[in-house]
Length: 104
Image 1 (spheres, rainbow, N blue to C red):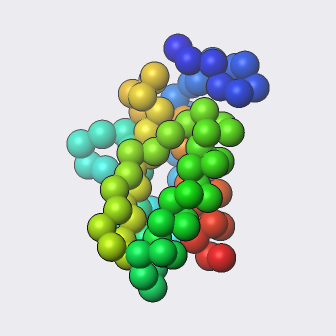
Image 2: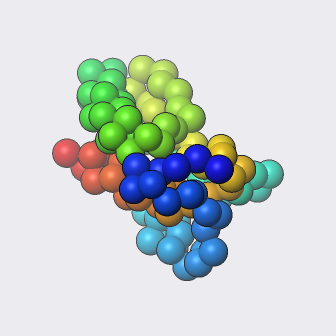
């Protein structure tokens, strides 16, 4: 078990209702893992890379790092808490932050 920045051990997400706003905003649950994924499209590579840079600062601050890839103006993100092999509140928090960062 890993300690999150607030020093609480990460625990698997119990209330699946917390996923509803993310699923309504383009996130999807992966069929073969307890993880969520989203594909972001930007106008060009610079905007995509800028998004990744801003998201990386928050990921580092919260010690919660995404699985992601970038090809030109597309960024594909998968979020899961590896220490518990599933979703946690940190995934919800980072997904929500990434959505706000992608908006501008």
